[in-house]
Length: 114
Image: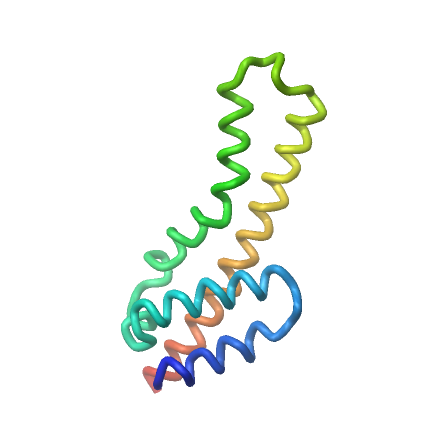
């Protein structure tokens, strides 16, 4: 299978116009083009998604760390709650992205292995 054929499968599996599909498509395509599809398909999924999950959650975690380490009077209770709700939303979305990534990896890996 060529990288182009794999990316066609990725596009087919992420054709919905939502943020989960968009992010999953971007992460998979970057990894396929960076590694080559055959090498990417051979790489265990846990090795591939650890970097992606960090990238997806990093902004929310950084904001949370800023709040925790800042002077307590710098943030209101409402601001802290808003950040925690945003972190929860990002964690759920990140999980959905990683699940989509894994399903794409599984399909392409199966097609390559025959």
